[in-house]
Amino acid sequence: MKTAGGSEAAKRRAGERAAEEVEDGFVVGLGTGSTTAHAIRALGRDVEDGLEVRGIPTSFQSRQLALEVGIPLTTLDAVDGVDLAIDGADQVVDDPDAEDDGALIKGGGAAHAREKLVDAAADRFVVVADPSKLAGTLERPVPVEVVPDAHTVVADRIRAFGGEPTLREAGEKDGPVVTDNGNLVLDCAFGSIADPDGLSGSLSQIPGVLEHGLFVGLADVTYVGREDGVERRV
Ligand code: 5RP
Image (cartoon, rainbow, N blue to C red; front, side, top):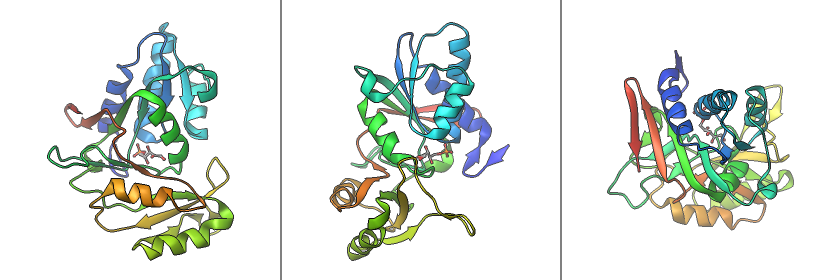
């Protein structure tokens, strides 16, 4: 089956390969999205077979799925550390010669604030993706989570340094998307992003921005699911 952005088989291969990295006793960050969901389901099967892990979900959706498949849950403030985080991405720089190789855009599911907290806290951050996510340069709009009252002033600041922000809508009759943290999301187009690290710093400095979806220098490995196997990128 093809889903938006890649085949389900490719996503499943990537997710299941990442779940193989989980060892007995691990605290595991559970990312958000359709690719990570395959890792969560695989982990649930391992738990059924006796693996002892505790999961830290990064969204309501990953929490619900983890509960459904029987993964015991904990929170970031209740553990000494996170051994491994598994998470998806909307775009991944795939250019070994580039300084920003492995940089990510995340937040397609509006969960990037909690995802960044958990992924950055992990000793090892494993990205799961299908080939449709790979790019020479990041160019998708960057999701920026903003405090609701601040969304117009933040949008002005983003326009001032060349971005085109669009408030993410849930649907014509449903109003804006509201994150698990009660905030709004601006999807900010910057064209081709030559310096993700610099842009990351600029976005973080805007008052009213809770978190943005540029993940630079965080990923340790990316598993890219393909139709016939899994490619490991470090
Ligand atoms: C959610 C995310 C997801 O990991 C990202 O959108 C990828 O999702 P999928 O695996 O469904 O393509 O960042 O905030």
